[in-house]
Image 1 (cartoon, rainbow, N blue to C red):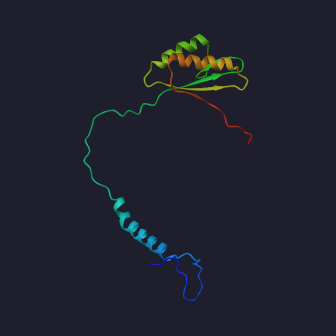
Image 2: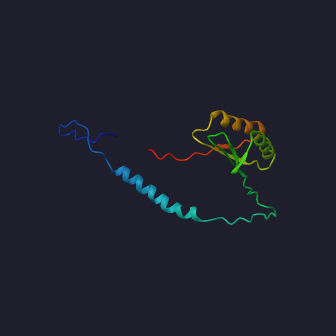
Image 3: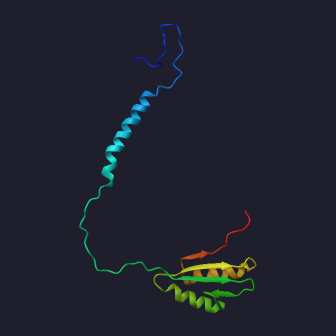
Length: 141
């Protein structure tokens, strides 16, 4: 079995430099036939008799709490100004609710980091697990 396909009888001992496309075309045609045969089998559905259950759907969406920290240190709970003591009490009450609410926090650019850290610490102490930050997209690119 000879590989290389060179013409050695004429004295030209160089291997063939062109790619033989015939095996590639053969393999592609075989794959095309396989896909044509199997494609209709994938679209057929199997009829299954599922059991019926009388239960309420569990699509309870958790409440969203919007916290805002302003540059002057004011803290807003869903657009209402609250103090730091009220914040802790509300967070403890919210942590006991099932499903636990999500806390979305936004802060002014000029807000003190200390105030933001206190709010985050209060949420952690209360046991609120779903805590996220809300930002606005930058206009500069």
